[in-house]
Each structure stands twice: as structure tokens, then as C-alpha cells.
Amino acid sequence: DTVLTQSPALAVSPGERVTISCRASESVSTLMHWYQQKPGQQPTLLIYLASNLESGVPARFSGSGSGTDFTLTIDPVEADDTATYYCQQSWNDPRTFGGGTKLELK
Amino acid sequence: EIQLQESGPGLVKPSQSLSLTCSVTGYTITSGYDWSWIRKFPGNKMEWMGYISYSGSTNYNPSLKSRISITRDTSKNQFFLQLNSVTTEDTATYYCARSIHTMGITDYWGQGVMVTVSS
Image (cartoon, rainbow over all chains, first blue to last red):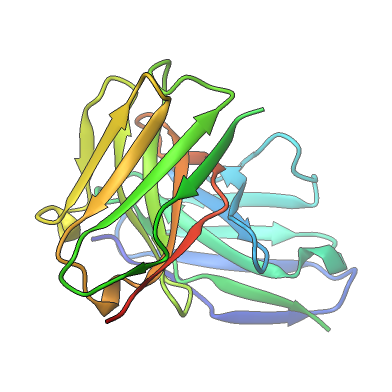
């Protein structure tokens, strides 16, 4: 299976820029997607196909990357962005998720 | 507005079968998309379990292939998860979701149902 590796946690101050990384154990082309999950809620789609912003998602969120290295950027970070962020690949079967990055606001 | 809602028992005994229903409103499951089951374990690990496509074909995670079945009732616009021979390691929050066929982008999720496997 394709293993997706994310940093477990990050802490930033409101107004700052934060980058969340996701590294794949093998190429996933650009079939990488990002989700946000707030406590007690279901995940929601933020970015699809590495760099496409889902409708209704603030333009503060952006994604980049291809192959094995991907980044989710939030600029500027707001208090409401406190959540866990997951990457997920769909190039290789089975589809797999990263372990999640918990974003905390200072 | 598209909505998905999971339902089913919150407690299952080891060695028994876990059965969940996903009721879909706002979209007909035979019109398009894949209809997926995804679970999140305590500690945040997420696992894609499998899907049934709009045409009725299925695709399962090989790690579950001998235990999982995803079926549907098109007359009720529902799809179902059955996971056999459960153990405590199957304790998780189970989500049903809609995914874009072939691209695997999951754009709508249910609220999730917590299932505990315990005697």
C-alpha cells in the first residue's frame, strides 16, 4: 500500500502562514486530496487533485505538489482553522490516508 | 442538498457481523459516483474500506476483502456495509461518503457512527 507520511502536529499564531506536508512512499501523480476534520465533525474536502480548491473553501487554503511530495498551505491562519488535516491518495489501490496533522492555534 | 446518514448498532460482539446502512438524500445513487465506506480508528488513523459504484460494481480494500461486503437497495436509495468476524480492532467511527468515480475525490461525507466491538 502507498504510505502517506504527515507531521503529527503544528502550532501557529493567527495571521501566520502554515504549510502542512504529505510525503508518499511512491508516486501518486497528482491524485492527492486534502481534508479538514474539526472535532466531532465529519471530514470536509479542501483541495482535490493536488492544487484545486473545492467550491466554498476560502482562498486562504492552497495546495501544491506532484509525484511524492505535497503541501497544504493556509495563509493567513485563522482561529477557526483549528482542526486535523488529512491527505489522501487515489492513484494507487487501495486508496490511503495520511496519519493526519493536528493544527493548533497559539 | 446532498446528505448521507449512517445508521446501525453502536455495539457489536466479537466474532459477529457489523452491519451499517447509509441513507442518501438529494442524489440518486444510480446516477453517478462511487458510494464509499471509510473508517477512522481511535488515534486518528483513517482507512478506506471500499465502495459500490453507481453501476453496482464493487471495489474493496484487500486488507478487508475476505470479510467485507457492500451492497445497495436502489429503491430506497441506500447502500450497506457488512463486515464479518469483527474483533476489537474494528472499533472505529464509520463514515459513508460519495466519491468521484475513478478520481477518488470524496466530496460528501456522512456524520459518522461510532461502533464499538466488545463483549
